[in-house]
Length: 409
Image 1 (spheres, rainbow, N blue to C red):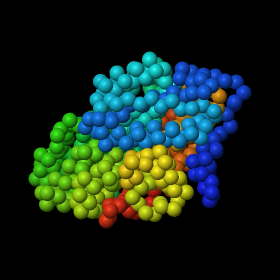
Image 2: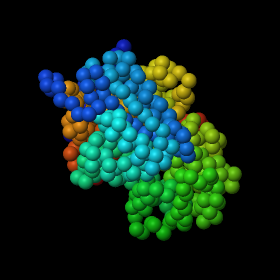
Image 3: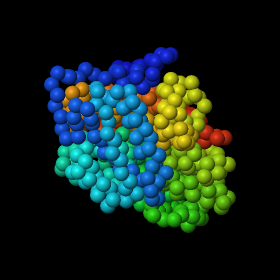
Image 4: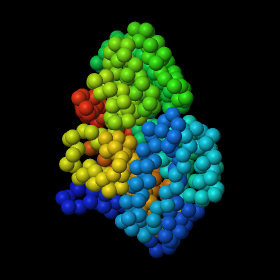
């Protein structure tokens, strides 16, 4: 497959260079679904601006700021984005209530980046029964890549099974024969992570897991779980936790004097939202896998897409923490949605939107790591299937090794 490389030249907006490369669309005849007019495209979103996973609320704020920038530049093919976002508190029943409101009352064209595995599971069947695109959901559960049964739902980030399998293989290579402790959130995302991790270890190595302990997202702390894992004799720790509990796990391990080889899932790697509250001294040597640029990594400072992102942050989110990686995530996923809408031209039907989403070929978007591209097809709803390992050193993440791809698996 040929790689489509885009050069960002000095003096040219990285976003403009990216957005101007869509496939030809038929602009002659206008066709619209609900949520679209000659002047507007309505997109719906739910996220946890409050509740136990409120650290993720910055994603929704970042997405909102992205569409403000797009609208200031004239919108997409002359249409402004009306981004309607509601707080669901990371509560599935609340998500159902808010998404019904978005679809039936607000009549959005599509939902975009609804956050959380359990929350998206609660609306999964509803969205497909209504035939409303449930796009680029903010969760890596493997269930979002099932176009045969759920043709209106697609993920964006690498799936959890792929990610956890990468950690397992690295552990086997670097910590052969050592005992492994696992912390996981008791929901579908945690089950995916554990499944992928055990698959990565292989049947002959599953006995290395000395303890696998779950927690609930409503638990005030994970202190007792960390004590249990340390007591199991584990010298390797695979930690699947949302930001607040991940920070607690790092801090408690340090308090106990437990210093395992620490593997932390990608959804909780924000330096400012997770690691700083845990104490940076306690985070040294933690390993994770990444697919987008961390804003605290100085190697990106002069790359065109990062320079553009910094300018966007300064203009549209001047009071926000520029060290929070959730803002780079929000920008990258929004740029992907921007391109899909642009490719629709004047045929802004839900069917055509899904056709564009299922037709990405080596698509590059701002702020993804070099070498990581998006690919989809009518039978492949896993857009990003590549990651690169990184280790926390000093006050930032340091990438090592090459890009590991699961494309075509």
